[in-house]
Length: 224
Image 1 (cartoon, rainbow, N blue to C red):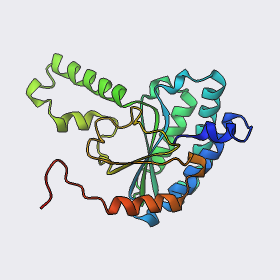
Image 2: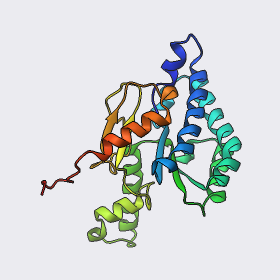
Image 3: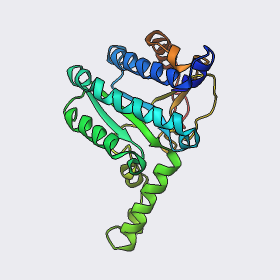
């Protein structure tokens, strides 16, 4: 969900205004997703690299995350949205972690839409944490080296139990993947749009889904 800061800067506003607008856009996309046939939706909210931003912006983002969870918890539950979070929570404020765990528990039984929010997430960091855990299990005899398979690694990732993505969309004109779902996206289709995230609405998402539906996906094979 890229382009919040630029959206605000282009209008002469502080970057955090753009992030707040971006949070409102998330709400609209989440509401529209089930009617577009989407059952699983992952949004990249804060990366492991985003700590390099100014203290003011980082603290502002964390405040926005907390307010969003507090304000949207009832609506998520009423709309049948299950919320999960991926990423390393150890560096997050305890109050934010408590809010995250609370909405996860409250929505655990819902399935109309499975919403995954990536906070302090990085694909390489995720693989590193999973690998260290498996190495520890091998060293302590709980896991045999031959049991370290692709499926075993997938199960150890933050996304264990969540399907690999079919489609990855990046907004704002950037054409790189930026450490997002590195392991999981090997056969995902990609869409790069110049639209800044605060301007990315349900209609553009619907248009992208139409293009996605017309693509031929061979997963390394050949056309029949």
